[in-house]
Length: 193
Image 1 (cartoon, helix red, strand yellow):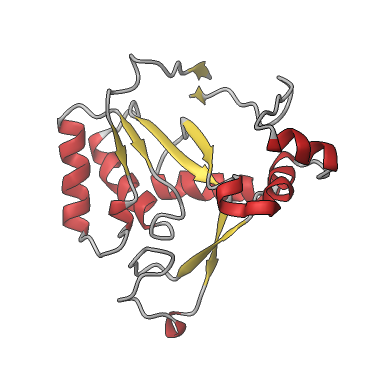
Image 2: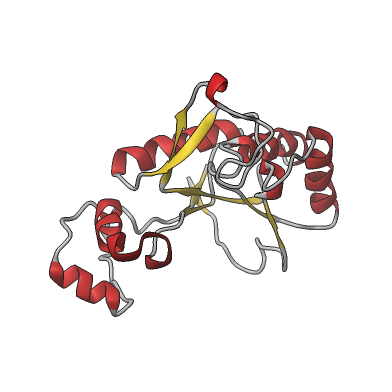
């Protein structure tokens, strides 16, 4: 494996945010989604961000389909997220014309917060399949913060870090700093094959 350096040479000045191609607030056709991705690549965009939450997998699927032909050597920089698991729901229970968690999508899933180690690995592996990639360059943690979780934030962060939430941890987090040892499994270096 070779290291991929993430700097101004690998990033474009602008990136492509994938929430809209996941049908955020209103449906977007496959053709329009693929045309938007193609246009971004044609204009020199080299960084694409998505998440399983965006359309409950739809954004990742569309990005993967489009980039398979546009970026066969997988040179573009891709980021996605962990921290939400997709749970299958019955189509009979869904009104696919109405937004669910902000997305109007045909995908039969809902997302739930789950920052556990097992869910993080499953989410990463599922994202690789949907994105049709050998690697994901940047893996972000989705909505892990006090703004989303309020007073439960220390518990969710502890779940992600795989540690026991303590009063000391809550105090440190309220001071907005946390230092991880280099050996922590959550201090990852981006690698490519």
